[in-house]
Image (cartoon, rainbow, N blue to C red):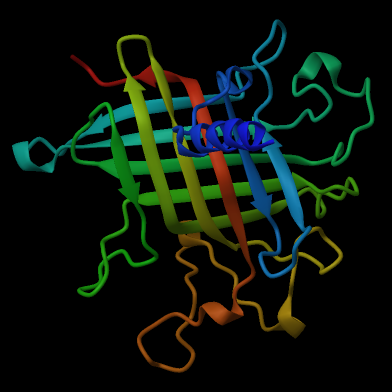
Length: 256
């Protein structure tokens, strides 16, 4: 009995102490959990980018670009992720509609843009809701999520629901420019930008007091009490959690 217990404990210790590794089933894909209501357990939506197979578009990729105004000290790079999850059953367009699975009607997509001064094989990039604040780090990430259709097939009159955010962490474990591949992990908090009824999945309107957030139109979170900080307790937020991407295709637009 003691021998069996010792063997079991040894195996448990080996598994617990080993590094977390990506699995082959995630190759060339981006997966995540979208927590539509962080305060309520169970309000979560799966995101798995659609498989790149014959006849289907590549629904996950990264674009690298280099930007400068001509001076040597103003060059920076953007790392832009784009991923779509439109087809649930087998996560590709060929098998859409052949099965009826949980969250079958959901269509959504994610865009992540990170700004860095230089590129390396391994990078940790942290964002902030502050773009220029003496007490907080300057933002380096912009995130966009759109729920185009919810689990009931509702598309909010064709508008869907858009969310934006800067509170994010991007950990690039491998940037392989030679083979055009990238792997790593990501998480973020986003805030709703689109009007929608409370019947739409994940929407909380706080008795009509919700403050929408859309930096594209310069519609930022208001500071109604004048303390110098946006009143984020009036925003409707979601979380992108447990996001993992492995060997996703990289399009390198940086000139040699």
